[in-house]
Image 1 (tube, one colour):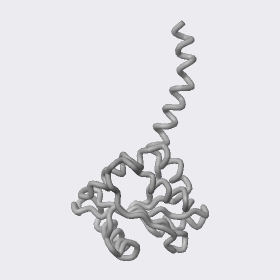
Image 2 (cartoon, rainbow, N blue to C red):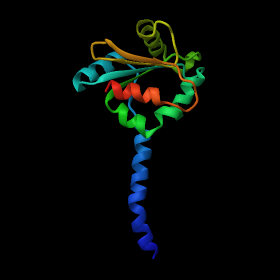
Image 3 (tube, rainbow, N blue to C red):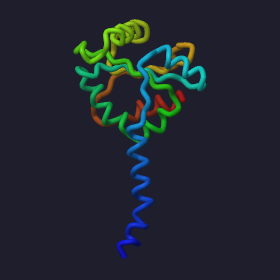
Image 4 (tube, one colour):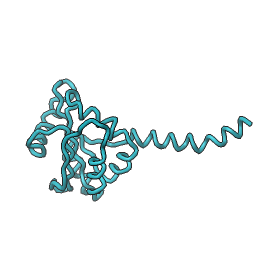
Length: 150
């Protein structure tokens, strides 16, 4: 009887494992030129995410409310993901990475809004953008942005 139970549980466990893997498997790049190069090769748009990882509460909430969801994992596979962190604690990034991120901040996020999602093509042309997050668990507008620009 316990073998029958185990046989019945295998599909469930395999599916659960796939969902867990997918929810943690996003591939965020941190270099703009690398992201643009991959976007061109793979014929995908780039999703640029501006965050203040150590000081921005809405940015922190998006991790749980959006990035850790299966929906985000599925939609984000249509993009090259570029993570631009501008922390207040300068020890969180190398000096070179922080300089790179600040340069992109002045180029792609002139108003210095956090969090900011920006969709660009492989030429760097802005296609769409969405700023802010109300921290209420509703991420429909973020998912719509991803769906619309894939």
